[in-house]
Image (cartoon, rainbow, N blue to C red; front, top):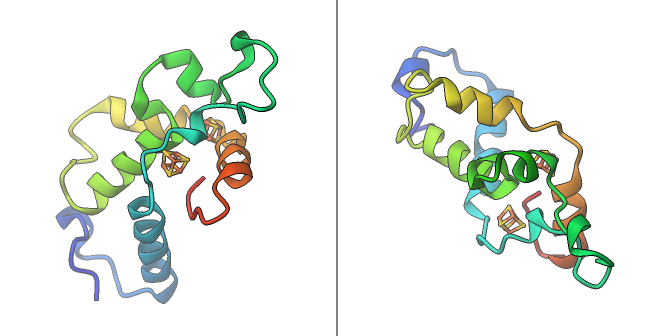
Length: 118
Ligand code: SF4
Ligand code: SF4
């Protein structure tokens, strides 16, 4: 049973796939330990500080919301109805500025074998 769905979408029909996706997303977002590993190249591999960052959108916009970690926070806040998706056009900007390059996944997977994030 979904209890924290945004009121705007409360009328959505019951959908097993949607509910599984919802719970998986919640599990992943809740597992963010705020370690910031998703923002950086594995430090053993960094040869030059200019190339130390892994996330292109975080590098460009210099704000945490534009990193994987920040997007976990935004996703959780949306699921908990702490953010209204219509409240700010910047919210969609945060989502769509991710180019799904997978850099965060590569970094987090390389150093956090127990991780569910990235
Ligand atoms: S690597 Fe994963 S757990 Fe660490 S801050 Fe990034 S999203 Fe969160
Ligand atoms: S997929 Fe790429 S752009 Fe999106 S959060 Fe991860 S590293 Fe950043």
